[in-house]
Length: 245
Image (cartoon, rainbow, N blue to C red; front, side, top):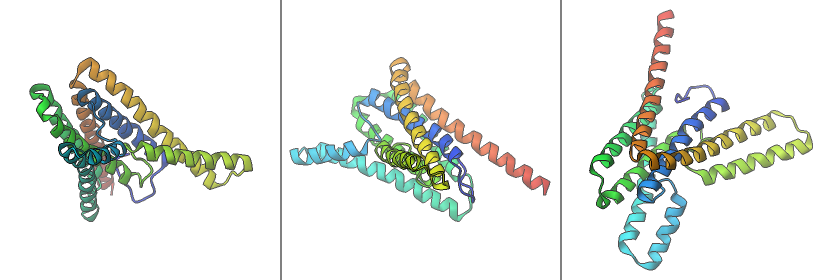
């Protein structure tokens, strides 16, 4: 799931990827909303809000919303740069390593908020979370070849609509070609992404109301554990293959 192989990825792998990463994105988004009243992945809304603040000439908010967008983009740039480095140096586990670091950073933020939470630091934490969401979305997008965008629900809904229309037209025409089968598989992937994000969002709000920042801590640890399990599994498999040669 977290390994980019030389062969083409299957839709089943992409759906597993969506299940984990879109769910975790929904969780973090909802937890951030409960904690700070803010969606760290909602760049469409943040860009619109920036335009609104520009028209009202509120300099502090203009800088804040501009920084939010830059943080998200910076996260995407960082993830892409690391992936390129991994590809150049043939690091098969690069996506696992990115996810592991993301989990550790999120765990660190959680501990900070649990013990040193202050309203004065909220904006800094929001910017940091936006950067993490940029890394998160960039990682899933690159790993899946653009088929899974864990935080970009507007784009996923658009893609799901396109796939659904293609499938419906093919059914009316009784077209059972490989392209139709591919569209059906892609539609399932998009629906998995949407379902996972929504489920994660609902769970995130409920968990934050129940256990506060422990919910964010659990999410960070979950990401780190998922990445660690993938690293150990692949490393063990590679050792066995080499030992059998």
